[in-house]
Length: 425
Ligand SMILES: Cc1ncc(COP(=O)(O)O)c(C=O)c1O
Image (cartoon, rainbow, N blue to C red):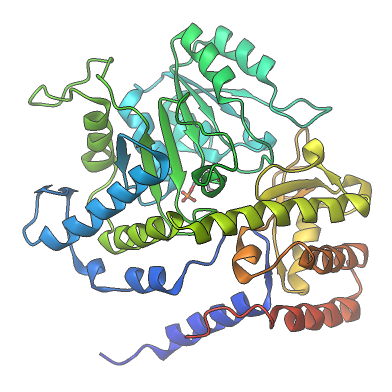
């Protein structure tokens, strides 16, 4: 087969883009080279429906080893009794978990998308809002913090089967114990979706949801710095109290129910090349180096927040405990949409985001979200946040000055050249 230079040229352009820009999308990161090598390897050729030791295809004895390694390492990271590493993405993990424990039409309660929640927590345009009956809690307008009183009131009124905590754009830690308390009162399960802060939780830098939440899902590609994918976890397995059965009548444990909901419930063949890459990522997470990385992520986020606050920017909730922050741009007279575009001209990548109680649509928005997981992987430390925030401020204060933005882009590219990315490529 002739080499497809057209596609490889485009891939090389993407590498150049990643190298020269400041990557502030809170859900992105740069994996290690070995993780990318595993993803681009021969395991992509293998079909392996089923689970290690019980597959529907022959020739699975090798991929069984990497999948088992991924499971064992993930269990070690979070001290788990159960882990499923097959979900193709965070959304797939949530779909499978909900399929496992809910019936169509059951009530669920999640953080409103416009307040920082995720599509899969009950949005009307997503399976979660179409198949189940969604109810929402929000954040307190004055503080930007989770409105636990509203959550409790909604739980008591709606009697959901599932309460979901976790978010895409919330910069503070969670009170999992408080959520579990009301869940027990109304007979609900609790799912913590830790897609964003998982890396910080893995290293004990944020509270752990595991002792309070029945189920935990995550992506593997944000702060966990692995390949794109999802996982489902439980600290404690247990008897399936819903009495769910398969055709042989033997879904005794929650782990059995969840395994069935991933495959064959929502997926076919697992992505064994990605699972091998997950195994490598989980090995990296178990190192002390990864602790140092996560500590730096937290320090960088706090330094970035301080730089923004000093320049008069309004951070929702006033700061951050994790790797990200949401900024309300209304006092700066620029929309999130325009800010995203303008920053793009200066090779600074971020995404517009609604702020709580936003008066603009999801396509325009009043806010912008910044995360530091990726730039920390590039090697940035607290003192670098001054350059980053100054550059953002310069762009946002001069949104229509094409010459200034072009000059700024040159400065950004020059600045980024010191943070070497993938020298082997
Ligand atoms: C909280 C949360 N859950 C789930 C997801 C979905 O992950 P994926 O994009 O891998 O489907 C995201 C992605 O941003 C997220 O932020």
